[in-house]
Length: 590
Image (cartoon, rainbow, N blue to C red):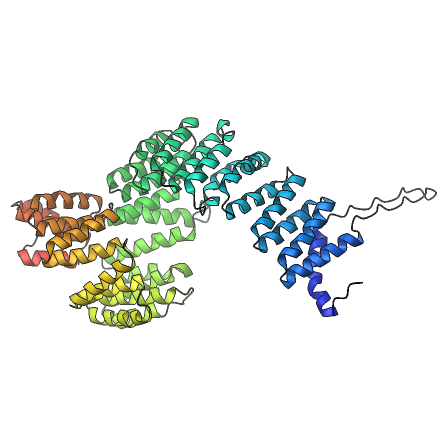
């Protein structure tokens, strides 16, 4: 006889015991034949024997008391003896929670051996093997698991494999194992493009861009109408693989190309400094699919970025009308799309001096996730009206939804102060926080920028060098320090080395390229400066880059092109400090 010590102990384990019993399948009783004279059939004996009841109860009790491995062993013993699939599943869950890798693997393999066609058993085995780092052993169970999946589920599982293998240390091995496991799938026309895409993504995780591009090409050749290889090509393009562009264009040349691929391509073109090409893609999409809301949103955002406010406002309002129309489905558009459109419309209203209109648009955004962003914009509007203290209070009043929110609010307040000629206050605010978190990178960077504005150049340099020491890959820190030296015309060889390091870390950043062009100009390499600055401005039209490029053109004697560039800079941002100082220094009114 087993004595549990008290009824209280018994009730504590009863919940887990009930769960185990619920997992065990008890066949339904067959009713006797209806005639009264017939002898009632003997009821079928339930397989829930005393021994089984004992094992389940003891297993759950041990598990809940912390002896997880022995508890799982009891339930596994019951599962093996009865062959019940749900008991195998419960034993597997217990073994995994016990954090005993070998025990978990033994349990899931026993489950798979007893029920080879059970999809969940194969899924559990894969997850346990990957968690144990035994990637090579996943080939066979992966192949078997894919074969047991219903046909309707295979595509989604195959495309999810890169996430499943994302944390394994040997990523090249993972790519090879999955490629071998999917060999049969790659001979299936409907699945081959997605399978090659998965292999390409795994190769990309391993740093093999060329192999990833080859997989994308094979996937496209296997099924030219599939969007999966084109989506991989977009990922490669974002990683700087320019050869992926041709594959994307081949896919988009088809009349039935998916709109989301064209939109992704347009976004990628903007990032690569090709806004004209992005416009062509968006115009094509809107002409072919005028009911695709996101196309209007992305084109409106591109126009807004280019300061073509009338065109941007028309597209953004059209987008909002489409998704807000009560008689029309929003097309799956998430709330952030609406909020993003309203934020951009508020910016346009502010640019034309309609501060009240900008305030109304911001007030229409009630997303908790955007609360800080909205209040920062409101704070900027208040500061423009001379209500800087009210702006600071607007930022401070944002509810904190996560531990990072307090830090983000402080950084936003400091930025507001810095942008409104209160650099010393901004530095004091950040410096006090730095004493609590001296190694926080965002604080170090923002404090250095505030220190520079406040005239504390030695402190700025000390903070940036501290940041570089903590994070040798902090390209923005190298750039900020190098640009500060270049702008002041001091230690130019060192400034150039710092900026070149920043370019190496962030080769596609137009603002860092602007710094490189500027240091070349300061060193007397005027024609090289012009070439670099023109490329930077083409990639990212910006008022500060326009100020620098205009000065280079002026120095080369090209006065009218310089004025034209400065006029363009004023159109982009009439209040840009660098541009205004440049015009004042040259006594030019473009």
